[in-house]
Length: 136
Ligand SMILES: [Zn+2]
Image (cartoon, rainbow, N blue to C red; front, side, top):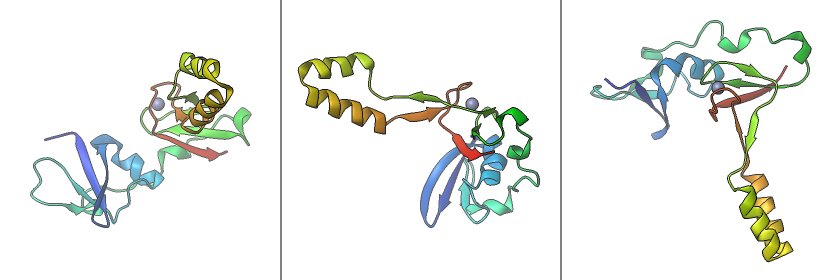
């Protein structure tokens, strides 16, 4: 048996998730009880609700520190931690950007803009991109 669960909605596969993450994914709405799931070894797809349940108390209900009230927070679905900030990572490298700036200001500007737009947020602890953002 694989530890991964394939999930489909409306006839299309929406993702493959670690089995142990299913309650959390249900809790945050990434996976719905009306979706279908399939795991290696299963003869056919079955309703998520036939096997999994959303947690009655979602993990994200844990109280954040009072000092962080009113700020953005990020909840990592993978390591199940809260952070006031995430690590932002760019796809391109700084050296490449410098190179483009040297070639021409237009090339440098375009590269910098593209880089800024492709920036993604990562968990500072486990570097996962499965970050959920909300306001405390
Ligand atoms: Zn994490």
